[in-house]
Length: 219
Image (cartoon, rainbow, N blue to C red):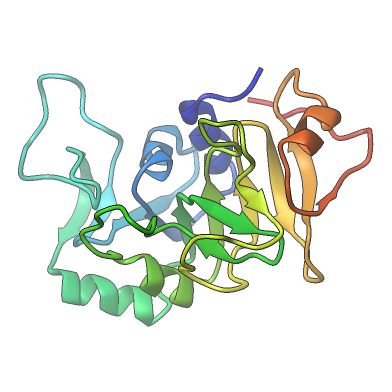
């Protein structure tokens, strides 16, 4: 079975190291806040100006003044701090963020990412994506591996305007967990429960490196 968006976020949450600062991008990455492993101390940063972001609020307890970069209502944890976007991007550009988790429209086998614009469609702006990919110490992508037409979004080369070049290290999709190799290629590390390596090969347009004994993800 392919993973749900919540399961993708849950798997990525296992990558978060103790005592780290983590930025959550718009889309699937925001769900990671709900799945921080017990015992892991992490400070979640939202680029619109917040340190100490908590999980999503329960229905009826939302505070409209507390939102993330995707304009979703959120919670804050004890000791959290609110500040302007200039200070927020100062933190990002100074490489104070240990891990950035981003969504993507396409990722290439060399680690290039396209996640801000589709030509011909209206876009408000690139947001903080280019600052994040240029400054982050480590970037993990949370994305759907195939589009609505069944076409792969893990490609030999990105076809959409690039956000960053050779900056992605790991990807988690509904089908598997991948690491970008230094020489290029998607190395399959884990597969979604019940999903075969052959199914993953079919859904990967770029170079895939995998043997037949790839373990299933454990939740």
